[in-house]
Image (tube, rainbow, N blue to C red; front, side, top):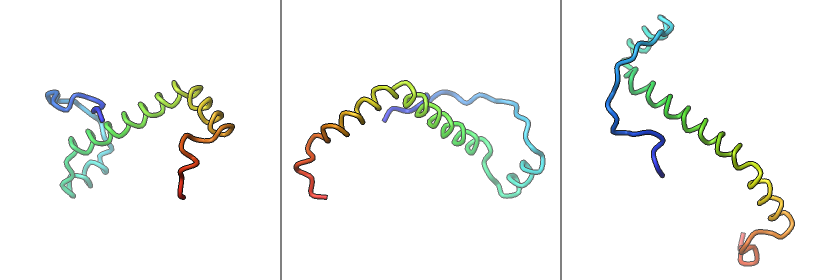
Length: 81
C-alpha cells in the first residue's frame, strides 16, 4: 500500500497550543509528543481519505451491491462456507 505522505520528508518545527494539564501529564509519562501527534495526524488523514474515497465511489459501490444482490457474486457456486 502506498503511504499517504512522504515518509522521508524533513521534519519541520511547529508551534502548538495544548491544554497545560494534558501536556504536563504526557511529559510526566515521557510520551513523545512529536511521534504521538504525527501518528494521530496520520490516522486522521487515513480516515478522511477513506471517507473521501467511499463518497467519491458511492455510486459504483451501490451499483456493484445491486448487481450482486440480483446475480450473486462470481464464484458463489464454488463456496464451501
